[in-house]
Length: 104
Image 1: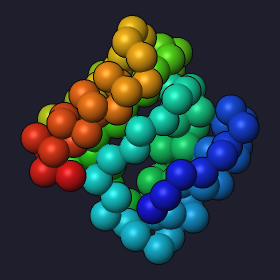
Image 2 (image 1 turned 120 degrees about the vertical axis):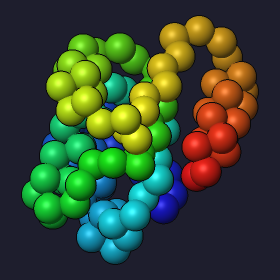
Image 3 (image 1 turned 180 degrees about the horizontal axis):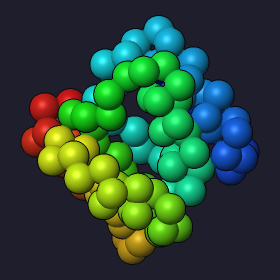
């Protein structure tokens, strides 16, 4: 997949992930700016009846919806990496290495 400008709009994030999953249900991870938008976007998995497992997510914001959903799912192969500090380059480097370690 590639970059997509979702304009920080939850429904646009959902439409984007739905479109990606429609063509590739085995997406290994997402790096996204905004936790709440990604929380909404994960509804695409349920809509398409795709299990939400073996997934790595990196986000910069900390809206609690995504983190509460992660805790409730209690899926050991679904991981969130969060960073509030550092510049863009350091976040990308950490994200890339964590995804590499996860086999993505």
